[in-house]
Every structure is written in C-alpha cells, then in structure tokens.
Image 1 (cartoon, rainbow, N blue to C red):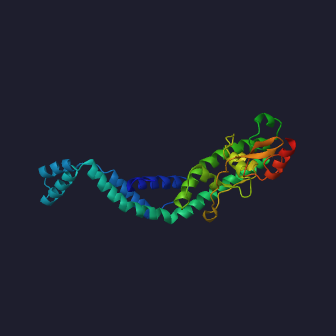
Image 2: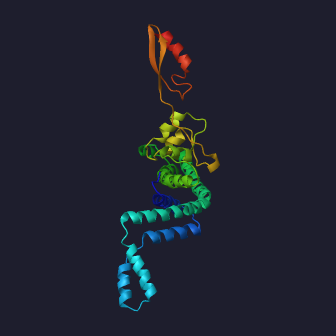
Length: 278
C-alpha cells in the first residue's frame, strides 16, 4: 500500500498510463489535474535570482515584496518542503482518483474485448495444430498447418503482453489484484475443471507460455466481465493419509481436489483396494 498521498498519485498515474497505452482513455479533468500536479512537482527554485533582477531593474515594490517572500520560502528545509508537498498531494489524489474511476469500467471493457479477440485468434490456431508440437514433426504438414503453428507463437506473445494492462484496468475498476493468481482468474474460464490440473497448466512455460497448456486442460482463454469475475484459489495441499493394510497401515498421498485420485478409484475405494493387497 502507498505510504503517503504523493506515492498514491505516482502509483495511480502509472497504472492509468499503462491502461491508456493499451487503448484506454482518461477524462479532461484527469489530464488537467495531473498536468498541474506535474508542473507543481517539477517547478524550479529561482526566486532569489529573480529578486536580484527586480531590485536592479524597474520592478514595482509589490513585485519585489512578492519575490522576497518566495526567496524566503526557498530556504525551507527538506522536511518542510515534504510536508507541504504531502499536504497538496492529499488534496489532489482524491480528485485524481475520482476522475480515473469515471472511465475505469469502460477501460476494462475495452481491454477485455481486445484480449478476448486475441484469445479467439489463438484458439483458432491451436485447433488447427497444437502450437507446442515439435517443428520437426511439421516437415510434411501442409502450409495451412505450418502457418497456424507459427502464428500461434506470435499470438501467444500478444496474449501475455496484454495481461498486465488488463490487470491494471481491472484494479482501477475495483477488482483486488494480487499478482499471478488474479491474472489467472482474469484470463481463464476453468469452471468445472480439475483445479490442480488448471494450475499446473497455468504455470507451464512452453513455447506459447501457458496458453496451449490451458487449452489442453480443457479451459477457455477468456477475460470475464467485471460483474462475473471470481477469484480462483490455488489447489489444497496434497494430504498424507494412513490406510489399513494387511500388516497394519500404509501411508498414501491423496489429492483433496481429485475425487478419483489414483487408478480411477475414490479415496475410500483406494483404501479398500490397498487393504486387500497388503
């Protein structure tokens, strides 16, 4: 979390810039406030030089008095300057955040639509040929297949590049983003699938990063609408359980996410099976 309002403005403006660079927009008042804040923080100290020129020139007494006050203000300590700047930031940040919020949902929808279009293009290429296929196996493939294989690699890079702006837009629109875990829920529809297999696919680092593996797992690459977003938790840890065996008990691993963990047997069926074998 930002430690002060100045840091909050910096973080907000960086997020908004990322979204704008990816196709989002801002309001006129947001641009105006940010520009004035930037001018304020970038101002140069030069009142003493101007005061000297005014005294030696034909400036009015009022102007000389004004420059004298500014020159005295320039003698403020760094702590004093920081206090004033933080006070100003505390007034500016809420207004800047309010302007950002006015277009946050629309910006997310813009980036979401772009991501989903790219996802559809990748899925089309994937359906033509698995992009993780060894290129040596494509020597005798037709041009359409080889083109799909090459295109999928390029599209996968685009999908990955779009994740960060999409996540920034989602956060500005009110979704809590906690890094890679939220990126999955913002880009993948894994409803009804084996949670551990989905996470294993997500953490794959293949030629097309995780995207082909996600489709292999049966999931759909798709960014949800804001109102449809749901966090997708990580799988529960593998459990060690003791099951009856012929001469006592045997320890086995059980995946709580898998109703049919080993040899298509449920946990209870597995225990019975092991009891017979030992």
